[in-house]
Length: 584
Image 1 (cartoon, rainbow, N blue to C red):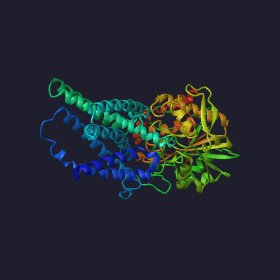
Image 2 (image 1 turned 90 degrees about the vertical axis):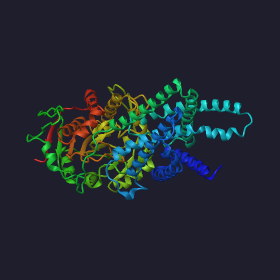
Image 3 (image 1 turned 60 degrees about the vertical axis):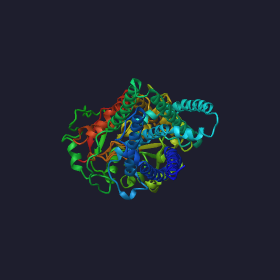
Image 4 (image 1 turned 180 degrees about the vertical axis):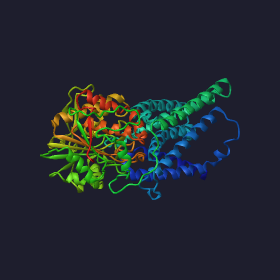
Protein backbone atom coordinates (compact mmCIF):
# COMPACT_ATOMS: atom_id res chain seq x y z
CA UNK A 1 0.00 0.00 0.00
CA UNK A 2 1.36 3.44 -0.96
CA UNK A 3 2.19 6.04 1.67
CA UNK A 4 -0.68 8.35 0.67
CA UNK A 5 -3.12 5.45 0.82
CA UNK A 6 -1.86 4.53 4.30
CA UNK A 7 -2.36 8.13 5.46
CA UNK A 8 -5.92 8.11 4.11
CA UNK A 9 -6.71 4.84 5.85
CA UNK A 10 -5.23 6.11 9.12
CA UNK A 11 -7.28 9.31 8.92
CA UNK A 12 -10.45 7.34 8.19
CA UNK A 13 -9.91 4.96 11.10
CA UNK A 14 -9.17 7.81 13.53
CA UNK A 15 -12.24 9.76 12.36
CA UNK A 16 -14.44 6.69 12.82
CA UNK A 17 -13.17 6.18 16.38
CA UNK A 18 -13.62 9.89 17.16
CA UNK A 19 -17.16 9.74 15.79
CA UNK A 20 -18.09 7.04 18.30
CA UNK A 21 -16.56 8.98 21.18
CA UNK A 22 -18.39 12.17 20.18
CA UNK A 23 -21.78 10.46 20.11
CA UNK A 24 -21.12 9.16 23.65
CA UNK A 25 -20.99 12.65 25.21
CA UNK A 26 -22.46 11.46 28.50
CA UNK A 27 -19.52 9.14 29.20
CA UNK A 28 -16.68 11.66 28.83
CA UNK A 29 -18.11 15.04 29.77
CA UNK A 30 -18.15 18.44 28.12
CA UNK A 31 -14.42 19.24 28.12
CA UNK A 32 -13.41 15.88 26.62
CA UNK A 33 -16.23 16.18 24.07
CA UNK A 34 -14.92 19.56 22.92
CA UNK A 35 -11.29 18.42 22.63
CA UNK A 36 -12.22 15.26 20.73
CA UNK A 37 -14.47 17.39 18.51
CA UNK A 38 -11.61 19.79 17.81
CA UNK A 39 -9.43 16.81 16.93
CA UNK A 40 -12.18 15.51 14.65
CA UNK A 41 -12.21 18.83 12.79
CA UNK A 42 -8.44 18.65 12.28
CA UNK A 43 -8.76 15.09 10.95
CA UNK A 44 -11.61 16.14 8.68
CA UNK A 45 -9.58 19.01 7.21
CA UNK A 46 -6.65 16.64 6.67
CA UNK A 47 -9.06 14.21 4.99
CA UNK A 48 -10.19 16.98 2.62
CA UNK A 49 -6.59 17.87 1.75
CA UNK A 50 -5.80 14.25 0.94
CA UNK A 51 -8.84 14.14 -1.35
CA UNK A 52 -8.39 17.43 -3.20
CA UNK A 53 -8.54 15.54 -6.49
CA UNK A 54 -12.21 14.87 -5.84
CA UNK A 55 -12.88 18.62 -5.82
CA UNK A 56 -10.69 19.15 -8.90
CA UNK A 57 -12.64 16.55 -10.86
CA UNK A 58 -16.04 17.66 -9.61
CA UNK A 59 -17.01 19.22 -12.96
CA UNK A 60 -15.14 16.76 -15.14
CA UNK A 61 -16.28 13.54 -16.72
CA UNK A 62 -19.67 11.90 -16.97
CA UNK A 63 -21.96 11.57 -13.98
CA UNK A 64 -23.09 7.99 -13.65
CA UNK A 65 -25.81 6.96 -11.21
CA UNK A 66 -23.27 5.90 -8.60
CA UNK A 67 -21.27 9.10 -8.99
CA UNK A 68 -24.41 11.20 -8.45
CA UNK A 69 -25.19 9.21 -5.31
CA UNK A 70 -21.64 9.63 -4.01
CA UNK A 71 -21.61 13.32 -4.82
CA UNK A 72 -24.88 14.02 -3.01
CA UNK A 73 -23.82 12.13 0.13
CA UNK A 74 -20.40 13.81 0.13
CA UNK A 75 -21.88 17.29 -0.19
CA UNK A 76 -24.43 16.67 2.57
CA UNK A 77 -21.69 15.21 4.79
CA UNK A 78 -19.59 18.31 4.19
CA UNK A 79 -22.58 20.50 5.10
CA UNK A 80 -23.12 18.55 8.33
CA UNK A 81 -19.46 18.90 9.28
CA UNK A 82 -19.45 22.64 8.57
CA UNK A 83 -22.57 22.99 10.75
CA UNK A 84 -20.80 21.11 13.54
CA UNK A 85 -17.68 23.24 13.21
CA UNK A 86 -19.63 26.50 13.39
CA UNK A 87 -21.92 25.39 16.22
CA UNK A 88 -19.10 23.75 18.20
CA UNK A 89 -16.99 26.91 18.11
CA UNK A 90 -19.98 29.12 18.95
CA UNK A 91 -21.03 27.04 21.97
CA UNK A 92 -17.50 26.21 23.18
CA UNK A 93 -16.76 26.73 26.85
CA UNK A 94 -13.31 25.12 26.82
CA UNK A 95 -11.35 24.82 23.57
CA UNK A 96 -12.49 28.00 21.80
CA UNK A 97 -13.58 30.02 24.84
CA UNK A 98 -10.82 32.55 24.08
CA UNK A 99 -12.80 33.66 21.01
CA UNK A 100 -15.49 35.05 23.35
CA UNK A 101 -18.29 34.38 20.85
CA UNK A 102 -21.55 36.08 21.86
CA UNK A 103 -25.04 35.54 20.50
CA UNK A 104 -26.35 32.97 18.06
CA UNK A 105 -26.50 30.25 20.70
CA UNK A 106 -30.03 29.10 19.88
CA UNK A 107 -29.20 28.60 16.20
CA UNK A 108 -25.88 26.96 17.11
CA UNK A 109 -27.60 24.47 19.42
CA UNK A 110 -30.09 23.44 16.74
CA UNK A 111 -27.34 23.15 14.13
CA UNK A 112 -25.30 21.01 16.51
CA UNK A 113 -28.15 18.56 17.05
CA UNK A 114 -28.85 18.39 13.31
CA UNK A 115 -25.18 18.11 12.40
CA UNK A 116 -24.58 15.38 14.98
CA UNK A 117 -27.43 13.05 14.03
CA UNK A 118 -27.43 13.69 10.28
CA UNK A 119 -23.63 13.74 10.27
CA UNK A 120 -23.35 10.35 11.96
CA UNK A 121 -25.67 8.74 9.43
CA UNK A 122 -24.16 10.53 6.42
CA UNK A 123 -20.59 9.67 7.41
CA UNK A 124 -21.67 6.06 7.86
CA UNK A 125 -23.31 6.13 4.41
CA UNK A 126 -20.11 7.67 3.00
CA UNK A 127 -18.15 4.80 4.52
CA UNK A 128 -20.63 2.34 2.99
CA UNK A 129 -20.05 3.73 -0.50
CA UNK A 130 -16.37 2.82 -0.12
CA UNK A 131 -17.03 -0.46 1.68
CA UNK A 132 -16.19 -2.40 -1.46
CA UNK A 133 -12.52 -1.47 -1.06
CA UNK A 134 -12.54 -2.82 2.48
CA UNK A 135 -14.19 -6.05 1.36
CA UNK A 136 -11.77 -6.47 -1.54
CA UNK A 137 -8.81 -6.27 0.83
CA UNK A 138 -10.35 -8.94 3.04
CA UNK A 139 -11.69 -11.20 0.27
CA UNK A 140 -8.29 -11.38 -1.46
CA UNK A 141 -7.03 -13.31 1.54
CA UNK A 142 -9.67 -16.01 1.08
CA UNK A 143 -9.81 -18.68 -1.58
CA UNK A 144 -13.58 -19.04 -1.60
CA UNK A 145 -14.75 -15.52 -2.44
CA UNK A 146 -18.30 -16.57 -3.28
CA UNK A 147 -18.92 -18.24 0.09
CA UNK A 148 -17.27 -15.35 1.88
CA UNK A 149 -19.46 -12.79 0.11
CA UNK A 150 -22.59 -14.79 0.96
CA UNK A 151 -21.61 -14.98 4.61
CA UNK A 152 -20.81 -11.27 4.57
CA UNK A 153 -24.25 -10.43 3.15
CA UNK A 154 -26.08 -12.49 5.77
CA UNK A 155 -23.99 -11.01 8.60
CA UNK A 156 -24.53 -7.49 7.26
CA UNK A 157 -28.26 -8.08 6.96
CA UNK A 158 -28.53 -9.23 10.57
CA UNK A 159 -26.57 -6.20 11.77
CA UNK A 160 -28.75 -3.94 9.61
CA UNK A 161 -31.95 -5.36 11.11
CA UNK A 162 -30.69 -4.64 14.60
CA UNK A 163 -29.57 -1.22 13.36
CA UNK A 164 -33.17 -0.44 12.39
CA UNK A 165 -34.24 -1.31 15.92
CA UNK A 166 -31.56 1.00 17.34
CA UNK A 167 -32.61 3.80 14.98
CA UNK A 168 -36.18 3.62 16.30
CA UNK A 169 -35.28 2.93 19.93
CA UNK A 170 -32.89 5.87 20.17
CA UNK A 171 -35.35 8.29 18.55
CA UNK A 172 -33.07 9.39 15.72
CA UNK A 173 -35.96 10.86 13.75
CA UNK A 174 -36.89 13.05 16.72
CA UNK A 175 -33.48 14.71 16.64
CA UNK A 176 -32.94 14.60 12.88
CA UNK A 177 -36.01 16.78 12.37
CA UNK A 178 -35.74 18.76 15.62
CA UNK A 179 -38.97 17.51 17.10
CA UNK A 180 -37.15 18.10 20.36
CA UNK A 181 -34.32 20.47 21.19
CA UNK A 182 -33.37 18.32 24.16
CA UNK A 183 -31.32 15.17 23.78
CA UNK A 184 -32.03 12.50 26.39
CA UNK A 185 -28.73 11.04 27.67
CA UNK A 186 -28.68 7.94 29.84
CA UNK A 187 -25.72 8.37 32.18
CA UNK A 188 -26.29 4.94 33.71
CA UNK A 189 -26.21 3.00 30.43
CA UNK A 190 -23.31 0.55 30.07
CA UNK A 191 -20.74 1.88 27.60
CA UNK A 192 -20.50 -1.43 25.79
CA UNK A 193 -24.23 -1.43 25.03
CA UNK A 194 -24.16 2.16 23.79
CA UNK A 195 -21.24 1.60 21.43
CA UNK A 196 -22.57 -1.74 20.16
CA UNK A 197 -25.85 0.00 19.33
CA UNK A 198 -24.10 2.78 17.46
CA UNK A 199 -21.88 0.26 15.70
CA UNK A 200 -25.02 -1.56 14.53
CA UNK A 201 -26.50 1.73 13.35
CA UNK A 202 -23.35 2.43 11.38
CA UNK A 203 -23.59 -1.11 10.02
CA UNK A 204 -27.13 -0.38 8.84
CA UNK A 205 -25.93 2.67 6.88
CA UNK A 206 -22.98 0.79 5.44
CA UNK A 207 -25.26 -2.04 4.35
CA UNK A 208 -27.73 0.35 2.70
CA UNK A 209 -25.09 2.42 0.92
CA UNK A 210 -23.01 -0.54 -0.22
CA UNK A 211 -25.86 -2.58 -1.69
CA UNK A 212 -27.68 0.48 -3.03
CA UNK A 213 -24.53 1.39 -4.97
CA UNK A 214 -24.31 -2.15 -6.30
CA UNK A 215 -27.97 -2.02 -7.33
CA UNK A 216 -27.47 1.31 -9.07
CA UNK A 217 -24.40 0.01 -10.92
CA UNK A 218 -26.35 -3.04 -12.02
CA UNK A 219 -29.14 -0.83 -13.35
CA UNK A 220 -26.59 0.86 -15.61
CA UNK A 221 -27.26 3.97 -17.67
CA UNK A 222 -30.41 2.83 -19.41
CA UNK A 223 -34.00 3.55 -18.44
CA UNK A 224 -33.61 1.79 -15.09
CA UNK A 225 -30.42 3.70 -14.39
CA UNK A 226 -32.05 7.06 -15.07
CA UNK A 227 -34.98 6.09 -12.85
CA UNK A 228 -32.61 5.10 -10.03
CA UNK A 229 -30.73 8.39 -10.38
CA UNK A 230 -33.96 10.37 -10.08
CA UNK A 231 -35.02 8.38 -7.01
CA UNK A 232 -31.66 8.92 -5.31
CA UNK A 233 -31.60 12.64 -6.04
CA UNK A 234 -35.21 13.13 -4.91
CA UNK A 235 -34.71 11.26 -1.64
CA UNK A 236 -31.56 13.15 -0.75
CA UNK A 237 -33.04 16.50 -1.76
CA UNK A 238 -36.15 15.79 0.32
CA UNK A 239 -33.97 14.93 3.32
CA UNK A 240 -32.03 18.16 2.91
CA UNK A 241 -35.18 20.32 2.60
CA UNK A 242 -36.82 18.69 5.61
CA UNK A 243 -33.70 19.34 7.66
CA UNK A 244 -33.56 22.99 6.64
CA UNK A 245 -37.26 23.47 7.40
CA UNK A 246 -36.81 21.72 10.74
CA UNK A 247 -33.96 24.05 11.67
CA UNK A 248 -35.98 27.12 10.82
CA UNK A 249 -39.34 25.94 12.07
CA UNK A 250 -38.35 24.70 15.48
CA UNK A 251 -37.20 28.03 16.70
CA UNK A 252 -38.88 31.28 17.22
CA UNK A 253 -37.72 34.73 16.24
CA UNK A 254 -33.95 35.12 16.57
CA UNK A 255 -32.62 37.04 19.50
CA UNK A 256 -32.33 40.72 18.92
CA UNK A 257 -29.91 43.30 20.23
CA UNK A 258 -28.31 42.92 23.62
CA UNK A 259 -29.28 45.26 26.43
CA UNK A 260 -27.19 46.76 29.19
CA UNK A 261 -27.59 45.14 32.57
CA UNK A 262 -26.97 46.29 36.10
CA UNK A 263 -25.66 44.15 38.90
CA UNK A 264 -29.01 42.56 39.64
CA UNK A 265 -29.50 41.08 36.20
CA UNK A 266 -32.06 43.78 35.33
CA UNK A 267 -31.70 45.33 31.88
CA UNK A 268 -32.43 48.80 33.11
CA UNK A 269 -35.62 49.19 31.06
CA UNK A 270 -37.98 49.99 33.93
CA UNK A 271 -39.77 52.53 31.77
CA UNK A 272 -40.75 49.84 29.28
CA UNK A 273 -42.04 47.66 32.10
CA UNK A 274 -44.05 50.52 33.53
CA UNK A 275 -45.57 51.25 30.13
CA UNK A 276 -46.91 47.71 30.09
CA UNK A 277 -49.06 48.55 33.09
CA UNK A 278 -52.09 50.75 32.63
CA UNK A 279 -52.76 53.73 34.83
CA UNK A 280 -55.56 51.90 36.58
CA UNK A 281 -54.17 49.55 39.25
CA UNK A 282 -54.57 45.87 38.42
CA UNK A 283 -55.11 46.26 34.69
CA UNK A 284 -52.82 46.55 31.69
CA UNK A 285 -53.07 47.25 28.00
CA UNK A 286 -52.87 44.28 25.62
CA UNK A 287 -51.00 44.87 22.39
CA UNK A 288 -51.44 41.39 20.93
CA UNK A 289 -55.10 40.47 21.29
CA UNK A 290 -54.59 38.09 24.22
CA UNK A 291 -57.63 37.88 26.50
CA UNK A 292 -57.17 39.86 29.71
CA UNK A 293 -57.73 37.87 32.88
CA UNK A 294 -57.52 40.73 35.38
CA UNK A 295 -60.72 41.56 37.25
CA UNK A 296 -61.65 43.86 40.11
CA UNK A 297 -63.20 41.17 42.27
CA UNK A 298 -62.31 40.30 45.85
CA UNK A 299 -63.22 36.66 45.21
CA UNK A 300 -60.37 36.04 42.76
CA UNK A 301 -56.71 35.47 43.70
CA UNK A 302 -54.51 38.53 44.14
CA UNK A 303 -51.22 38.76 42.25
CA UNK A 304 -48.80 41.36 43.61
CA UNK A 305 -46.29 42.99 41.28
CA UNK A 306 -43.28 45.28 41.38
CA UNK A 307 -41.08 46.51 38.54
CA UNK A 308 -38.16 46.80 40.98
CA UNK A 309 -35.92 43.92 39.92
CA UNK A 310 -33.63 44.05 42.92
CA UNK A 311 -33.19 42.23 46.21
CA UNK A 312 -35.28 44.98 47.84
CA UNK A 313 -38.02 44.60 45.23
CA UNK A 314 -38.11 40.84 45.76
CA UNK A 315 -38.45 41.31 49.53
CA UNK A 316 -41.20 43.90 49.03
CA UNK A 317 -43.35 41.68 46.81
CA UNK A 318 -42.89 38.75 49.21
CA UNK A 319 -43.88 40.89 52.19
CA UNK A 320 -47.01 42.04 50.31
CA UNK A 321 -48.29 38.46 50.63
CA UNK A 322 -48.16 38.72 54.44
CA UNK A 323 -47.27 35.05 54.57
CA UNK A 324 -46.11 33.30 57.76
CA UNK A 325 -43.95 30.31 56.79
CA UNK A 326 -42.87 28.14 59.71
CA UNK A 327 -41.08 24.89 60.37
CA UNK A 328 -38.58 23.50 57.88
CA UNK A 329 -38.75 25.92 54.93
CA UNK A 330 -37.77 24.83 51.41
CA UNK A 331 -36.91 27.33 48.70
CA UNK A 332 -37.65 25.58 45.41
CA UNK A 333 -35.80 27.08 42.47
CA UNK A 334 -34.04 25.85 39.37
CA UNK A 335 -30.29 25.63 39.93
CA UNK A 336 -29.93 26.02 36.15
CA UNK A 337 -27.37 24.71 33.70
CA UNK A 338 -24.01 26.52 33.57
CA UNK A 339 -24.35 29.40 31.11
CA UNK A 340 -28.12 29.72 31.57
CA UNK A 341 -30.22 32.58 32.95
CA UNK A 342 -30.65 30.98 36.40
CA UNK A 343 -31.61 33.30 39.28
CA UNK A 344 -28.50 34.98 40.67
CA UNK A 345 -27.77 35.00 44.38
CA UNK A 346 -27.32 38.78 44.53
CA UNK A 347 -31.01 39.03 43.64
CA UNK A 348 -32.46 36.23 45.81
CA UNK A 349 -29.97 35.99 48.68
CA UNK A 350 -31.67 38.50 50.99
CA UNK A 351 -35.03 36.74 50.67
CA UNK A 352 -33.58 33.27 51.15
CA UNK A 353 -31.63 34.28 54.25
CA UNK A 354 -34.65 36.07 55.77
CA UNK A 355 -36.01 32.64 56.75
CA UNK A 356 -34.77 30.59 59.70
CA UNK A 357 -32.50 27.77 58.47
CA UNK A 358 -33.80 27.72 54.87
CA UNK A 359 -32.93 24.94 52.44
CA UNK A 360 -32.73 25.35 48.67
CA UNK A 361 -34.24 22.22 47.13
CA UNK A 362 -34.03 20.74 43.66
CA UNK A 363 -34.23 17.40 41.83
CA UNK A 364 -32.00 15.86 39.18
CA UNK A 365 -32.74 16.22 35.48
CA UNK A 366 -33.96 13.50 33.12
CA UNK A 367 -32.37 14.87 29.94
CA UNK A 368 -28.68 14.70 30.86
CA UNK A 369 -26.64 17.87 31.13
CA UNK A 370 -24.64 18.98 34.16
CA UNK A 371 -27.35 18.11 36.72
CA UNK A 372 -28.23 14.55 35.75
CA UNK A 373 -26.65 12.96 38.78
CA UNK A 374 -26.46 14.13 42.36
CA UNK A 375 -22.70 14.71 42.65
CA UNK A 376 -22.62 16.85 39.51
CA UNK A 377 -25.77 18.70 40.61
CA UNK A 378 -24.29 19.69 43.97
CA UNK A 379 -21.23 20.95 42.14
CA UNK A 380 -23.38 23.15 39.89
CA UNK A 381 -25.27 24.48 42.93
CA UNK A 382 -21.95 25.43 44.52
CA UNK A 383 -20.65 27.06 41.34
CA UNK A 384 -23.83 29.14 41.07
CA UNK A 385 -23.42 30.38 44.64
CA UNK A 386 -26.44 28.66 46.17
CA UNK A 387 -24.49 26.73 48.82
CA UNK A 388 -23.11 30.06 50.08
CA UNK A 389 -26.57 31.38 51.01
CA UNK A 390 -28.33 28.22 52.26
CA UNK A 391 -28.12 24.48 52.61
CA UNK A 392 -28.89 22.67 49.34
CA UNK A 393 -30.84 19.41 49.12
CA UNK A 394 -31.15 17.38 45.91
CA UNK A 395 -34.38 15.76 47.00
CA UNK A 396 -34.22 12.67 44.76
CA UNK A 397 -30.68 11.79 45.86
CA UNK A 398 -32.19 8.75 47.58
CA UNK A 399 -35.00 8.04 45.13
CA UNK A 400 -38.66 8.99 44.85
CA UNK A 401 -41.85 9.12 46.86
CA UNK A 402 -45.34 8.86 45.39
CA UNK A 403 -48.10 11.45 45.57
CA UNK A 404 -51.67 10.68 44.55
CA UNK A 405 -53.11 12.69 41.67
CA UNK A 406 -56.80 13.54 42.06
CA UNK A 407 -58.94 14.39 39.03
CA UNK A 408 -56.25 13.98 36.42
CA UNK A 409 -56.88 12.93 32.82
CA UNK A 410 -53.42 11.40 32.36
CA UNK A 411 -51.77 10.80 35.74
CA UNK A 412 -52.91 8.88 38.78
CA UNK A 413 -49.56 9.16 40.56
CA UNK A 414 -46.75 11.70 40.67
CA UNK A 415 -43.19 10.74 41.63
CA UNK A 416 -41.34 13.46 43.54
CA UNK A 417 -37.96 13.47 45.26
CA UNK A 418 -37.86 11.26 48.36
CA UNK A 419 -36.85 14.29 50.44
CA UNK A 420 -39.98 16.24 49.54
CA UNK A 421 -41.78 15.31 52.79
CA UNK A 422 -38.92 16.65 54.95
CA UNK A 423 -40.18 20.23 54.61
CA UNK A 424 -43.17 21.94 56.16
CA UNK A 425 -43.45 24.98 53.89
CA UNK A 426 -42.42 25.62 50.27
CA UNK A 427 -41.47 28.97 48.74
CA UNK A 428 -41.63 28.42 44.98
CA UNK A 429 -39.17 30.89 43.49
CA UNK A 430 -39.31 30.67 39.70
CA UNK A 431 -37.58 32.43 36.84
CA UNK A 432 -40.36 33.02 34.31
CA UNK A 433 -39.12 32.49 30.73
CA UNK A 434 -39.76 30.50 27.58
CA UNK A 435 -39.29 26.76 27.28
CA UNK A 436 -38.45 24.62 24.27
CA UNK A 437 -41.09 22.01 25.09
CA UNK A 438 -43.62 23.58 27.45
CA UNK A 439 -43.70 26.97 25.71
CA UNK A 440 -43.01 28.77 28.98
CA UNK A 441 -41.89 27.92 32.46
CA UNK A 442 -43.12 29.48 35.69
CA UNK A 443 -44.70 28.41 38.97
CA UNK A 444 -46.74 25.46 37.64
CA UNK A 445 -43.73 23.97 35.89
CA UNK A 446 -41.58 24.49 38.97
CA UNK A 447 -43.94 22.55 41.23
CA UNK A 448 -44.45 19.75 38.69
CA UNK A 449 -41.37 19.02 36.60
CA UNK A 450 -39.21 20.88 39.12
CA UNK A 451 -40.19 18.85 42.19
CA UNK A 452 -40.52 15.57 40.29
CA UNK A 453 -37.63 13.14 40.63
CA UNK A 454 -35.73 12.18 37.49
CA UNK A 455 -38.11 9.22 37.08
CA UNK A 456 -41.07 11.49 37.81
CA UNK A 457 -39.95 13.94 35.13
CA UNK A 458 -39.91 11.11 32.61
CA UNK A 459 -43.39 10.06 33.77
CA UNK A 460 -44.77 13.59 33.23
CA UNK A 461 -43.03 14.11 29.88
CA UNK A 462 -44.50 10.85 28.58
CA UNK A 463 -48.02 11.93 29.58
CA UNK A 464 -48.21 9.14 32.13
CA UNK A 465 -47.39 6.38 29.64
CA UNK A 466 -43.72 6.03 30.65
CA UNK A 467 -42.94 5.86 26.96
CA UNK A 468 -40.90 8.25 24.83
CA UNK A 469 -39.90 11.29 26.91
CA UNK A 470 -39.59 13.69 24.00
CA UNK A 471 -41.78 12.29 21.25
CA UNK A 472 -45.06 11.76 23.08
CA UNK A 473 -48.35 13.62 22.81
CA UNK A 474 -47.76 17.33 23.48
CA UNK A 475 -51.11 18.09 25.08
CA UNK A 476 -50.83 15.05 27.34
CA UNK A 477 -47.44 16.34 28.54
CA UNK A 478 -48.84 19.82 29.22
CA UNK A 479 -51.86 18.40 31.05
CA UNK A 480 -49.63 16.09 33.08
CA UNK A 481 -47.63 19.08 34.33
CA UNK A 482 -50.80 20.65 35.71
CA UNK A 483 -51.89 17.34 37.25
CA UNK A 484 -48.52 16.71 38.88
CA UNK A 485 -48.54 20.25 40.24
CA UNK A 486 -51.94 19.71 41.79
CA UNK A 487 -50.69 16.62 43.64
CA UNK A 488 -47.95 18.73 45.23
CA UNK A 489 -50.34 21.51 46.25
CA UNK A 490 -52.87 19.01 47.63
CA UNK A 491 -50.17 17.35 49.74
CA UNK A 492 -48.92 20.66 51.19
CA UNK A 493 -52.45 21.80 52.05
CA UNK A 494 -51.84 25.54 51.80
CA UNK A 495 -48.25 25.60 53.06
CA UNK A 496 -46.88 27.05 49.85
CA UNK A 497 -46.45 30.40 48.09
CA UNK A 498 -45.19 31.41 44.66
CA UNK A 499 -42.92 34.13 43.28
CA UNK A 500 -42.06 34.61 39.58
CA UNK A 501 -39.12 36.74 38.48
CA UNK A 502 -39.62 38.19 35.00
CA UNK A 503 -36.10 39.15 33.95
CA UNK A 504 -33.83 37.81 31.20
CA UNK A 505 -36.95 36.75 29.29
CA UNK A 506 -35.34 34.37 26.81
CA UNK A 507 -37.40 31.95 24.73
CA UNK A 508 -35.22 29.23 26.26
CA UNK A 509 -35.30 27.88 29.80
CA UNK A 510 -32.65 27.63 32.49
CA UNK A 511 -32.16 23.96 31.64
CA UNK A 512 -30.47 25.24 28.47
CA UNK A 513 -26.80 26.10 28.88
CA UNK A 514 -26.82 28.09 25.63
CA UNK A 515 -30.09 30.04 25.69
CA UNK A 516 -31.15 32.53 23.04
CA UNK A 517 -30.37 36.09 24.05
CA UNK A 518 -33.55 37.83 25.29
CA UNK A 519 -34.97 40.34 22.83
CA UNK A 520 -37.57 41.90 25.13
CA UNK A 521 -37.32 44.11 28.18
CA UNK A 522 -37.40 42.89 31.77
CA UNK A 523 -40.82 43.30 33.43
CA UNK A 524 -40.72 42.76 37.17
CA UNK A 525 -41.39 40.37 40.04
CA UNK A 526 -44.84 38.90 40.80
CA UNK A 527 -46.11 36.90 43.78
CA UNK A 528 -49.30 35.06 44.72
CA UNK A 529 -50.73 32.18 46.68
CA UNK A 530 -52.25 30.85 43.40
CA UNK A 531 -49.75 29.38 40.89
CA UNK A 532 -52.21 29.46 37.98
CA UNK A 533 -53.15 33.10 38.53
CA UNK A 534 -49.46 33.97 38.87
CA UNK A 535 -48.42 32.26 35.64
CA UNK A 536 -51.44 33.70 33.80
CA UNK A 537 -50.52 37.21 34.95
CA UNK A 538 -46.96 36.72 33.65
CA UNK A 539 -48.24 35.42 30.32
CA UNK A 540 -50.65 38.37 30.03
CA UNK A 541 -47.80 40.81 30.70
CA UNK A 542 -45.75 39.21 27.94
CA UNK A 543 -48.68 39.53 25.54
CA UNK A 544 -49.11 43.16 26.57
CA UNK A 545 -45.45 44.00 25.92
CA UNK A 546 -44.66 45.62 22.59
CA UNK A 547 -41.43 43.61 22.27
CA UNK A 548 -42.77 40.24 23.47
CA UNK A 549 -43.42 38.61 20.09
CA UNK A 550 -40.55 36.08 20.25
CA UNK A 551 -41.76 34.71 23.57
CA UNK A 552 -45.38 34.80 22.40
CA UNK A 553 -44.39 32.75 19.35
CA UNK A 554 -42.63 30.22 21.57
CA UNK A 555 -45.65 29.89 23.86
CA UNK A 556 -48.13 29.51 21.01
CA UNK A 557 -45.95 27.13 18.97
CA UNK A 558 -45.99 24.68 21.92
CA UNK A 559 -49.65 25.30 22.84
CA UNK A 560 -48.27 26.42 26.19
CA UNK A 561 -51.49 27.98 27.48
CA UNK A 562 -53.06 24.52 27.55
CA UNK A 563 -51.18 23.86 30.81
CA UNK A 564 -53.09 26.70 32.47
CA UNK A 565 -56.36 25.58 30.89
CA UNK A 566 -55.92 22.11 32.36
CA UNK A 567 -54.75 23.52 35.71
CA UNK A 568 -57.92 25.60 36.04
CA UNK A 569 -60.08 22.70 34.90
CA UNK A 570 -58.79 20.33 37.61
CA UNK A 571 -58.91 22.95 40.35
CA UNK A 572 -55.23 23.82 40.77
CA UNK A 573 -56.03 27.53 40.55
CA UNK A 574 -57.77 30.35 38.73
CA UNK A 575 -56.82 32.06 35.48
CA UNK A 576 -58.69 35.15 36.62
CA UNK A 577 -56.90 37.34 39.12
CA UNK A 578 -56.59 40.83 40.54
CA UNK A 579 -53.22 42.45 39.73
CA UNK A 580 -51.95 44.80 42.44
CA UNK A 581 -48.95 46.96 41.62
CA UNK A 582 -47.14 47.64 44.90
CA UNK A 583 -44.94 50.36 43.38
CA UNK A 584 -47.71 52.88 44.02
